[in-house]
Every structure is written in C-alpha cells, then in structure tokens.
Amino acid sequence: MPAPENGGAWGILGGSFDPVHLGHLNLSSEIRSKAGLDGVLLVPAFRHPLKEACHASFEQRVEMLTLAAAGCDYLVVSEIEKEQDLPGYTLSTVRALKKAFPMAVFSFLIGEDNLVELNRWHKPDEILAEVPVLVGVRPPGNFTEGANHRWSDRVRMIETSPLEASSTRVRELTGKGAPSGQLQRLIPEPVRQYIAAKGLYQ
Image (cartoon, rainbow, N blue to C red):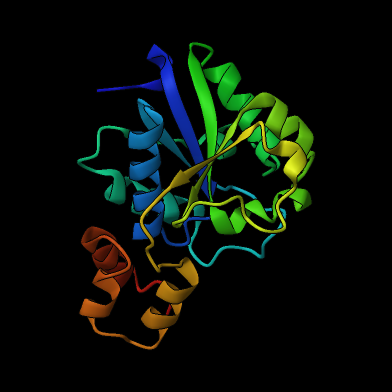
C-alpha cells in the first residue's frame, strides 16, 4: 500500500469536502493514472480563507472522506491542517506536507474551474515555485481562458472525464429530501448513508 512517508510521486487535493463527491474522486483517480502518481492525499480544510464556514464539522468531513477513500489504497486522508493548526492557505499546507514527508515529490491537483481563481490565492507565485499544478480539464483540454499564462510552464493540463457534481448541489438535494437515487449519482453510497444517519445538510 503506497504511503507518502515511503516516498514516491503524490498529488495533493485540498478542499472543504462539504461533502466529498464523485467529482473529487474522479479527478483524483484520472489524474493519478495519467500523471503516473503513486497516490493522492485528500486534505480537508480546517480553515478556508476564501469561503464561509463549512456546514459539516471538520471531524464529520474527515469521516466522510475516510468512507469515500475506503477500498482505494492510493487515496490517503490527511488531517495536517488541524494537526498543525494551519491558517488554511495552500502555500502553508504544501510546505507543511513537504516537511512532513521529505521523501515524497508532490503536485497540487485542481479542477479546471479553480484554475482561473489562482490569482486570488495567497502568494500564488510561491505556490507554483513549491509544486507543479495538475489541472483536470474537459476535452479538448485547452488552457483555460482567463488563466494566467505566466504559470504555463508549471501548470499541466490533464484531460479528465466530465462529471457534473458539486458539494453545493449535494447539500441542496439533501435539504430538499431528494430520493437516494439522485444522490447516488453524486456521492459514494457510504457517504450518502452517513449524511442521512447524521442528519447533515437538512
């Protein structure tokens, strides 16, 4: 079973994961395969500078990620942002992970929609100096319009299958009491069951 402490090539997928959905898992799986990564670290945000507070607690989001990652030995859930009381900036998280796992070589994973937000991130040039960014894009996989081309040598576009899923949509459907079949197209079944059992997003 791959582990970042043993070295290798690892992706970092950060986010609120409120909740984790199939889009996150699809992005991780396809980029891992096409970029030749040994595994992907799923790093839930303890604090999120650009977003409002999460609906589920940090512990609940970790539990949902753990359920979603079960059976995928290349997915590892990291609680480093809480363990080290990090400020929630990508740069801080990346540096902490590099220090914690000095034998691993990291890349940062994002979806195409996040690429145009890169300018808003805390010290984006320093992030790109620390790690390359692997971007999951829909066919034909062109460099996203509006993205900053000065980073093109540190950003690699990887074509991934389109999958319409978002945490916002999951919360909306759950709040409306949508049938399980609708949610099963967006989130893993163990996560759906956990949300129902805990009464989340009502």
